[in-house]
Image 1 (tube, helix red, strand yellow):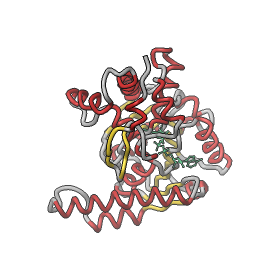
Image 2: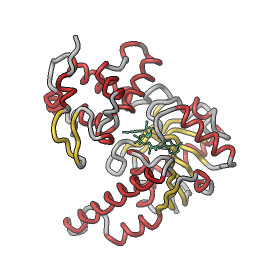
Image 3: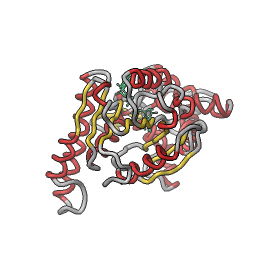
Amino acid sequence: MSKSGFNSVGVIGIGTMGNGIAQVAAQSGFTTKVVDISQENVDRGMGIIGKNLDRMVASFEKSGGERGLSQADRDAAWGRLSASTDLASLLDCDIIIEAAVEREDIKLQIFGTLKEKGYGGIIASNTSSISITRLAAGVSDPAKFMGMHFMNPVPIQLGVEIIRGLLTDDDTYNKVVGLCQDMGKVEIPAEDKAGFGINRMWVPFVNEAIRVVEEGVMAPDEADKCTLCLGHKMGPLVTADFVGLDVILFICNVLEEEFGSAYKASPLLKRLVEAGQLGVKSGTGFYVWEGGQATGVNPAVQRYRIG
Ligand SMILES: NC(=O)c1ccc[n+]([C@@H]2O[C@H](COP(=O)([O-])OP(=O)(O)OC[C@H]3O[C@@H](n4cnc5c(N)ncnc54)[C@H](O)[C@@H]3O)[C@@H](O)[C@H]2O)c1
């Protein structure tokens, strides 16, 4: 019996976060259904999950079973997964984890559709920065809604911030804590304030690293290199490329709105997002990316200077 009591997990959005959440849910034994807006996105997301599971099998074989996943466990996880473009396919899930793009209007539209279709289970949003209490106003039962903020990459990072809205009830909270544990994660409670805990600390750090670059204090790769002394595994700019620069810009704007101009997004971050250079997912961000590897600093970033 799972700690959450759940059998099935629905995931909305099969992008950077959604594919990781779906993979871990399926690996953890849950019937897992994913929905995205187009068949192309569904195929891309399922392709990423398939490759990640294959990598785990290779690691299992190479390490003599010490790490990774056996072929049989891989096949079982894959068999628990299904994906479509139809939100109605999630209506029988015990919980739906919403991991669609970080836009309040889109999230509210999704919740409105679930309400219209009569979904009565728990909904958790993976939002990085939008108020849980505000999002809860769009669902049919705010008591059954809360934040479940996974960290990127989901199959590797253990922490999940869990955020109650003002109206979230104890049953929902306890089941979501149980789900974190069922998925092998560690729950970290945070209050419903802009950026919660992790992004309140981390996004201003990234933003300042970008300022260091655009003011010509350091080259991007040097800025990343020197922060490794903090014990981080990756520098802020390379991590920002993995997270998605659009996501970082959105969070900066939310932090600025709640805490003031000290949190204002740096001009270079805005320019990159305006140019569609969003990091790994678009192929170029602070670095140029090929097959998940950085091949060098983006020449436009190297050139851009202010101040
Ligand atoms: N990227 C990160 O490191 C990170 C970390 C923690 C939380 N988050 C949060 O997770 C959420 C998803 O972020 P992401 O980085 O995975 O974004 P992403 O852009 O990689 O993926 C978002 C996915 O949502 C899909 N989508 C958009 N509208 C939809 C709809 N109406 N129905 C179904 N699917 C829809 C898109 O097609 C896309 O596949 C955001 O709320 C973000 O703030 C992101």
